[in-house]
Image 1 (cartoon, helix red, strand yellow):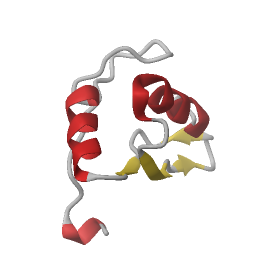
Image 2: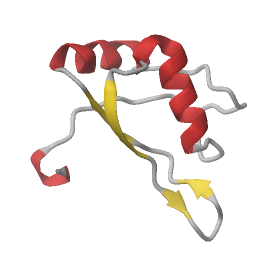
Image 3: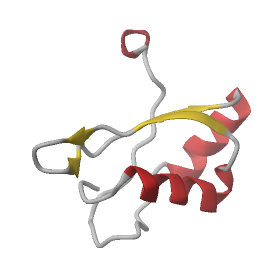
Image 4: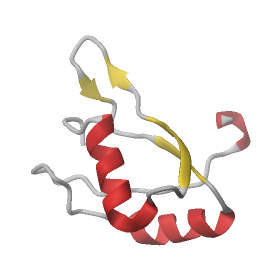
Length: 81
């Protein structure tokens, strides 16, 4: 959701059991509006963690804020690295 913050996303990941299972998170923000751009990159520590993360968060609808957004989780492609 565009009104999420990096800290709120980190809190969600940690609360859902992924504390210590990711080592990088990029959460871009529009500096003009102070809104998130609606996506993040999360690097999981292992392939097993990534598979579990994808199954757990894919289709998520229960955000800490009111929104109709649905979480879509996908693998990064070579041109995104």
